Each structure stands twice: as C-alpha cells, then as structure tokens.
Image (cartoon, helix red, strand yellow):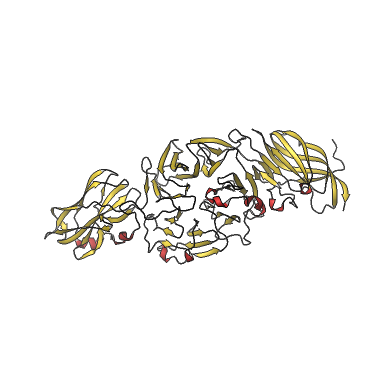
Length: 628
C-alpha cells in the first residue's frame, strides 16, 4: 500500500475529553470521549479491571482503611459498614472479620487518634445517627465503646482503717470513672441527675481511710479515681494521688481505694477536679451529649461535627469538651455539611460556603471567628471532600464541579471538571449521601463515585487524572462504569506490594471488588473501554474538504479493536473493519478508507473479556478535496 501524495496529521499526545465543547472544535490533542480508560504521558489505555475480594453479607456503604503502628502494635484493618447497620472490621494481617457494632444509618465518617478510631454514623439526611463510638486497637477483640461516658450512680462507703495522714474534720468524697477509651469524665456518684458526694468526718489526729465502691461496673470501665475536698474548702475537689484502682468492665465488683494524704499535701501536689464537672458526657441513663455526623482529626485534637456546631477537644484529650470553651460556630449559625483539616486549620463547608478557623494553641473559644474563604463554593454532602491526599491539598465536590483546594480555590473559580461539565451535571445531588471521593496520591488520580441520571446509588466513577496539573486546563478525565452495581469506594494499601488499590463495595451481598494491575476484566465481565480523539486536522490547514485515505495507529493490546470515523459535528460516520491487537505488535496497523469531510475524529473501542488497548499515536493521511 502506498501513502504517497497523502498529507499526514499525527496526534502523539492523546489527552482526556473536553465534552463541554460538544465535539466542536475539540483541540487535536484533546479527546471527544473517554470511558474506562487511563491517561499516562503520551498515551491512553484501557483501565485496570476489578477482581473479587473478601465476601460481604450485605450492601457496603462505607470503606475505611485503618493503618497504624504508633503503639508498637501493627494495625492493618479495613473498617466498613453494611446496609444492615453492621459496622465490621476485617483484619488484613490475620484475615478475620468481626462485627464492631450495629447502628442504623447510611455510612460512617471515622477519624484516627493515637491507637483509637472514632466512628460516628451519618444518616441519608446528613445528621448523626447516634453517639460516636471508639475502637481501641490495643484491646483484644477491639470492642467499640460510646464516647463521653457518663458518671456512675453507686454511692461509695468510707471507713477508718487506722492511723494515717488525712486531716481531721469534715471532708467530701467521691470518685471518677476512667474508661478504656481513655476518658476521665464527670465525678460520681450521681443521684437524680445531680452530683451526690459522701461527707465523712475524720476524727482528731491523722487517719487512713478506705473508699469502697461495690456494684456492677460499666461495660467500658478501666479505673476508678478517688476524689476529695479539704476541710477548709468543701467546694474545691482534688484527685487523691496514687490511689486509683483498676476495675474490670461489666462485672460485679468491689473496688477498695486507700486514702492517706493530708490537706496540705492535697493543696501542694494533687490535681484539681473542678473542670471535670463541666465536661460534656452522657447522663447516667446513657443519653447524650450529642450525635455527631462526622469526626475529623485536627493535629492533636478531635473535632465532632454537628449541623450548627463543631466541638473541638483539648490536645491529646480527645473527649475533653465543654460547652463554654470548646465550641466553634459559623457566623449566623450557618449549616456545616462537612469539614476537613489542612495543617492546623479546620475548613468547614456548607452548601455554598467555605470557612476556616486556625488552632492557636488556646481553647477553641479563643481562636477567633471563622474566616470566610468562599461565599459561593461549598460541599454537596458529608463525604464530598477528600483531604487524605499526598500533600497539603483537598478535593471538594460541589453542585457546580470538583474543586482543587489548598487553602483557597483556583483564582478563576473554575472547577477541574469544567471541561466535562455535561457529565458532572448528570449527578443526582438529591442523593448526595451516595457521593464519595478518594484520592490515589501515587498515580495522581482522584475518583468520585456518584449516582447519575436520577439514580439514588452510585452508577459511575468520574476519574480525574491530575498528573499534568490541578487546574481545569490540565486534567484528564474518564467516565467509568462497572458491570455490576456498587455503593462505596475505599483506598486500601496492598500489604504485599505497598501500593494503593481502589476497593469497591457491592450494592448487595457479594464481594468487595479490588482494582488490580493488568486485570483485564471486571470480575469476569468485559471492560467496555472507549476513546474518541479530537478533530485530527489542525486549524488553519486551509482545506474546506479533504479525502482521507489512510489511518495509522501506534497501538498495542489484545482482542479486537472496533473503529468508527466521525465527520465534523458527527453528521456522518463510517465503521472500519475491526483489527486484531497484539501486546507486542511488529508494525503499526494501517487502514484505508474513503471519507470526505471538513474534519473528523476516530472512536476506538474494545469490549470483550481479556481485551484492552494502549494507544500512543493516531495518524490520519489525507488528500486535498477542496480548498477555502
């Protein structure tokens, strides 16, 4: 075959589609369509497929990978929620799966602190379904306990055990429960909703006392700390030093605490208890103090989100909260839909606003008013932000697009999804609870799963490759679908390869699906991989019409490649004979065709189990038909 007399036009850098232009005029290096493909420098190829992973008992609505070894104990666990309300933990080291707790709701929005995972449950309405739970990696079986344990009701008894150092006179006594979640809460005992300490008169001369608490211990109990007042000030409370005792959880038990300290030593060396009275806790019946819909770690603090409040803890005391000192609200009590941290700043987002407040080391009350970052851009749902990325940046999904955020939005306020707006506008924001984002920092791709075209569960993955830049002119895009429906996405680091992998949660009982390198099917189903080029003839060529004679591809792959050539505005098309692809082709396929148009694009497609393509160049060879 001779190509003499034909002018070649090559596209050696296939890029993602700009569907906003509706095919006219799509730049030569930009595509017109991309489905189930991935972009790398100077190439576009079929995406990796998904293989079946661990079994699930129901639809999976949340996936979170919990990895830490800060405590010397390796923790590698996938935490996920099923639609039945069961929050489960899969141990990636041993392979076992256990149910942590059951709570009706849509999904979980957890956060880590030291060796513990804080897990709130959010409803489809975007509010908390219950009190936050805490899972401690250091405790066998990893039990989950409610945060902010309340005081106990058991009244202690005092007895004199002999000579000692306790100052003579009237003292008040009580105790404080410390839970296995690390929380030392309000003083006990409580009776009829109020603190009811015991008064005991110490006889003349120094004495030694025993404080006894006898009864059924709370299910999350760890220690009891005795507290007392001095004779000269019955309103100032102190922890008795070195007198705490360990107690079992959920058992009938008698705890005996020895008290042998003078009032002078209490004043000089004991820690005061007074602030504990103001702590926000559950009541003695287990209710309260609030139901957060999301937890966020902010440095050494924990943030608990409510629609009109953010409760922010003391550093390293992740459950120490008071209403007066630890609450941050947006101006006008604007709604908080979600939040995320970057460095020591907390960003709080509503439907169309973004605010920032920074940790200055003081109690949150002294941080100052949150400052507005944007009065038009916010988040569409609880899980519509992703800040667990490779740097000081986050992704924000909004009705108007997907935004890159590094403390501010792009100066021209265009989202990275700007040039694929037709696809973005297919998202059903009435089902924002179903939208989730994950960032593949290693491959520099961010994936949004969303329900499209009125669906109420995720139907597609909108994948943005930002390896060549994070603004709207630089990203590449692919619209992906799976042959079976799904409900969640997670980023899980593979233990064997140390590489991040996307996990997909099924929409019914079945298996997790795990995206696997060089997997050429989706759990046995074909990957319908499509790429359509932009218009191949450059602007300014001076041709009104041309006659295209040959099409040459620099392409590798497997299976049959279907090809369709489209004329300008897709008013005319021609299907070419499919060609067999090879993983290591000896020559470039060259197809002849007879096609007249002002300009044209070519659609390439593989859609069979095991089929794939890897394209690096398209060359169209044309002769002049008519000039301007």
